[in-house]
Length: 392
Image (cartoon, rainbow, N blue to C red; front, side, top):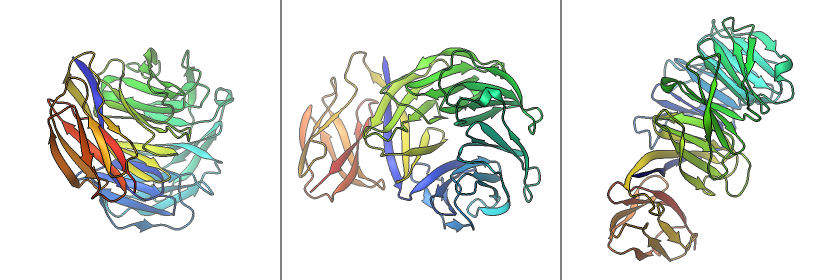
């Protein structure tokens, strides 16, 4: 039986944003202004906005979750901040320290340390005293030269560093003084890192997909294989049996690519290109719900495994024309002759539903307002989702 991934856009947070972080039942959005917007994830598919919390100074460009706290860094001045989120809907700045970092591109949060990557350096902040964080070290060595730190991820006392030209491993038994362990063999480009700790897998994103490593021995990653599809590059996020990869190249086909992952090698499951928009800057996940941050807002995306489709069948339904005006056609995938169809607006409300009894059917759109709509097709486990742009 063939498997693929249904990629559903369930809602949209229309707030120009730099980054997102998820944890403790909340999503935190870092807008382009100096503020944090908490969202309650009781319904993770449609986050519920809470009052915006403002802070003084310039906005951080990165935020990371660690239990009870958010760390923020980057932006003008690159001030490292600690937010208390013991009251989840009310992030409060309780401490800060200037890092001196220029052009921060990566941030990692550990319970008592924060790591910020900038050019060929790593800035290490001691957060043992959350009310008075201190800059413990501005670390650089020859192994970091020749690239830009673009991803940071820790696994116990091991820190993985993506610096665009290589994937590096450091021992952080003493977090304030990392010691180089190895440069992972065969890596020519590493743009982003994510991990499935339960299966001891490290995912390293590159310009054409990702490389996968076994980290059963954390300080000695061993190559498992490569995965790629639809030319995705850049930001990676693991969640709920999927790896989502977002394009970062600002092209008109920018979007996300989904991989199914069951502990072996990720398998290309489907893409959603040309619909997400430009400048994907961050991702977070709660199980198989992903939050894709871009300068235009945050897309909420649900991933599901499609099962029960025979090998060799066409997996995609087709809408045309797209964009459409008052009429469009829905053509079901090969092998499906009947389906229940629902059309949602961008806040998740059903605006049209019908039972399709033929492979190809004309759909009346004349009563719908211009804008984005999402299609859901249900038939024997087949649940793809596609976006239709309505225009006047």
